[in-house]
Length: 449
Image (cartoon, rainbow, N blue to C red; front, side, top):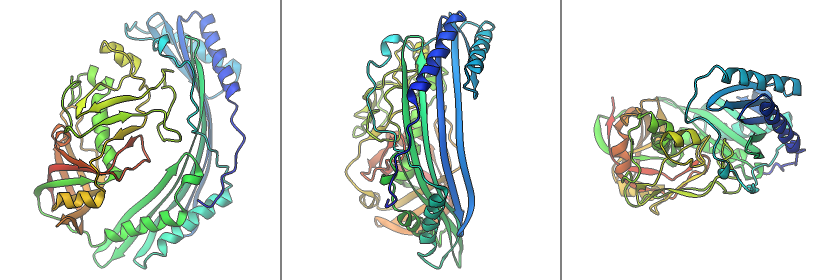
């Protein structure tokens, strides 16, 4: 972007770490055998403009601390938004009181001390953007104006929004580990509506980054949102059929999100997963490899340690289509008789292999079928793998989009869908924790009007 980022005063990490240390010391003085605490400071600005007028202007400033104590294997937790020493000591004492009345859980406790990081790498995650409200409003206004100027058929808008967020979190536990991490996240989005004689269609686009200089230009975001809405004008219903389905990159990570939900420790030890006991099994075709890379500089899901203080590290989650392991925090790992994988709080930058084609190449490979660009509803059963969601996109003929479609439902079973992937594109969307290109599924049921 042309708007230059200005360095803002850093949040005081040393003070926050000292606060955590004091809480842990007080927990010990209260008789806790183990304790952990996490403190956070958050601030941000959001400005929204609709049809050239300011719609919302919000400033956020939050702070808080949560503490968990263990008396043997009895656990108590409490939290406070007041970071004064008196309030935090009272919070610790409340957690201790709770722990004395809870039942013992043989799997409860901190992550193993040996898994704490020896050193914390600098992952370049903090790039403050002290955007004045006037500048944020101007940016959103220019973004929306660019969208409305694309075509006279873009006649309405749900608005353009600019947001900037900066946060600091410190975590520590009674193993002697205390670490802190400063992070930023900035975003610009636009949603517009187009109309023709057949009705109205809506679409959007957004850009997101840790560093504001890496955001797309405001005008480009608006124009892309408008073009996407225009492409959907004249959408039709189609008859029920069975055909290949291509998930566009911007929604394909949701498909892999269901896979991740199935291999999380909680789903496994609760025996509530369509991939139950699937470690070592062929889940995807042989061309699929998925790596976790927690230390990519500036990436959305990078972290030097997880929510339990466990050092993160590279791992191969899927190799040759075979599941290499689960996604575990320390509690789930103990329940399953395994070791934590450093995933308390989620995964850290999953990189999905591709088969070399861009989206146009995947469309040509599909020849005839459905390109899905939007999904609606929550019709996914994580236990059985049954999948049924509302969708919109484009019907493809002869390897190219023929016309837009809407009011359809796509259905299948996730286990079959993952096993029958045909190709994965190189058009990777890097805006989320899962980095994948468009995903082509061999066949699904498409229910139309």
